[in-house]
Image 1 (cartoon, rainbow over the protein chains, first blue to last red):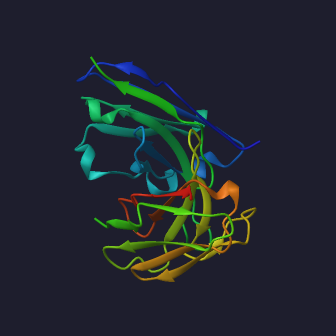
Image 2: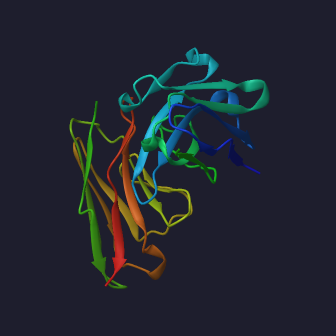
Length: 123
Length: 107
């Protein structure tokens, strides 16, 4: 069964750090790019960033709005991707989703999603 | 960076209506445009990829068109289960980006 499970969310104070995990199964994790997408309550979807596969040198790219505070990594031996969030702000409060992608007929899209994990940044 | 603009941000429609949502990219993205449906408390669901290709299992009343900078999602006959939010997303170049969303409500 194809599955994604995000974990690690919770309550953190402004300025703090949190590391989210995304455990994958049922598909070729090592060959997929892994993305993080977030959604604040009542708001739209926001792409956070992605890490490519080993074949693409684990290249990462992030949304400019994050200004270097977030870092995506992966452990292919554990079929797990991570999102390290530092210097957290109240506006980072959101549900965080991970989602894989790989090119199909030259197109990239997100057809598999987890349930998400809620991060709340508050004092 | 490529910006995605959706319109309208919300609309009210009745069951059976034909609904059209538009998405505009700030620069050409060829056909690298995807559409998602999201219901409250749920993860997004892929409807259309490559601007016009219907994802497996998605009803044929959903269709997508466009290329370059202007795209359209059409629901030919709105069903009760279609009341949801819809998002476009460009996958042409990183950083990727979603449109602001369109909420389809019951009239």
